[in-house]
Length: 237
Image (tube, rainbow, N blue to C red; front, side, top):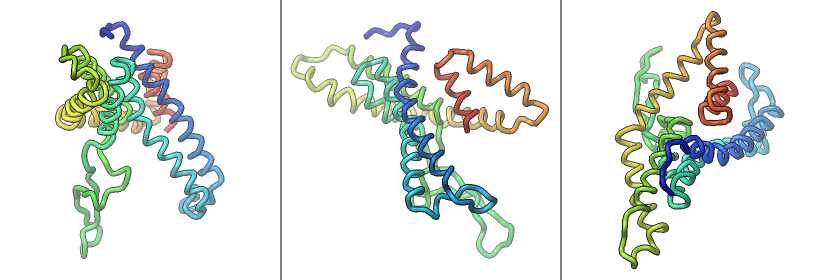
């Protein structure tokens, strides 16, 4: 499969179309759990008091956790066919687990004093990672797909051809994608996502019209494509 720039949108939409069912599944289950949960602190829904609702909430969160890896996997699939799935999914998972996050913790014995610490494997929860989010998944999927496509084009001896799609391409392409995501583009993309999210979220009341115009332009930009989905997920958050 040769790369054609005009097919870039098709590659991205391939990933989005496979990711949307995970959004639907996770969103419906989380909404159900919160809708029937008793009120907790600050009058907010608290499913922790019900084992049944907590189970539903955890299943919904698990579906959402798979969103970015699946998005990346099937963007890569759209580019390189089946050999792209593994590097895409590995890259998508890395995009949501780039590095342990930092956290403010109280200093023992000192009132109202906090220090910034790096979380370790023993102190991290599922959400305590630096994540490049939806945009990181797109980047990982594109990198994984094009790396796998490049490896498919390499002329190999006949005796190696049967294991190329099931061993050599997944292993080599995953190593390349993992290195690029961890060491080159992952953190910059995560910083960009955080900056965009903070900028949109902290717009004052006087900027609400501008915010609406920006989100409307993003939704109309590609009508169902990745830019549209970023605007949708921000509005639904």
